[in-house]
Image 1 (cartoon, rainbow, N blue to C red):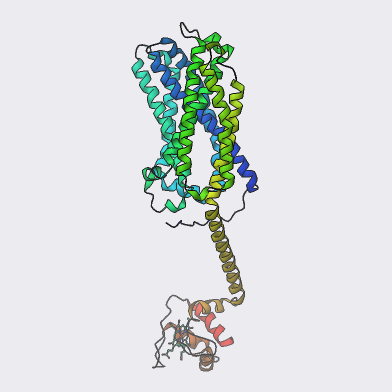
Image 2 (image 1 turned 90 degrees about the horizontal axis):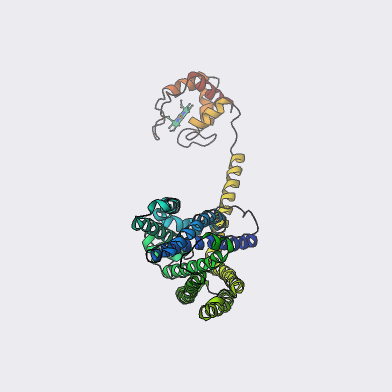
Length: 433
Ligand code: HEC
């Protein structure tokens, strides 16, 4: 398997590389938090709505959760611009190649996102219009959630494919790129992070005073709601660890390095206290349930930041050789372009510039066969001058209707396209040369 080495555009980066890398990690983390909340919110709203068929209080909860989804989706989209631009800047050839290789599906992101957003709005804004037809409402929610679930898979397939140029030649469109080792593992890992972060967000969000005052549950107790989300958060973190190990096992070793493994281990370790505290909350007496919330968040935030850095570290390692091969190819190409430019300039300088229209017309029409001193295809100008000295009209007449004198060579073609004035100028030039 050899990796194609595309040529880059020989332009400098708009900012120092290290700075762009830091910006990429930060901007991506901000973006992905809102993606998680959007996706997780849609998922939880659906789950609660289904649960609401049995326990109506959950339907109220679903409605509240849906209020957050549309806000978070707007933030996810806006915050996604920066990382996308930086990736395009830092890894232009790789990202371009992978986007093109899954082109159809990559383009389909736009209509799919549009449809998902519209469904989310229908789901949210017409909530009470659907009273009496909960199946339809749930159907819309399910379709919206499915789209929200599918779109990140396209992104993941793309950013995974860009990491491994050695697959570019064998990949045939989206599905085959999606089935490359480790995409699905990464996706499940991502999905569990969505559930984890959203569950924690909802623990906080439902715990606020305004929420508790606004939503009037008839039987559901707040503590049950929070336990419900804590249980999801805890389960998702276990799933997160398992899928994380799967991702590790499936990642090609070319991107592994000590720094990557170290940062990853630290990231994993940072999440452990959160697990402990969540377990504590779940197993304690009900009224103690929201202890440690801030500590849990800090622990997961550290883990997320470290994972974000590790993720970039892997990408950097994986693409290091390819990047330098591209840089070398681009540099060689730029040097060749420069050299060719200089040679062209030089050639321009050495080609004598025609100083009269006669000379210009001669160069264009006659010089291919007539040299100044050597007989080439036709006789040398020296010879012609000797024959036609003082008789420019003789040259004009000959050229209008060339005869046949020198039988050893070819005969001369006629020049009906030249005007008398041009011919006159040419013969003057020949005779005075
Ligand atoms: C494709 C080659 C070719 C081109 C182009 C060409 N010539 Fe010639 N020219 C010849 C050949 C071959 C002869 C010799 C013909 C012969 O002696 O039968 C010749 C002969 C001549 C002669 C000598 C005639 C003589 O009396 O001996 C003149 C004058 C001449 N060419 C002028 C021109 C001029 C002016 C042009 C441009 C407008 C021109 N040629 C373009 C091939 C060419």
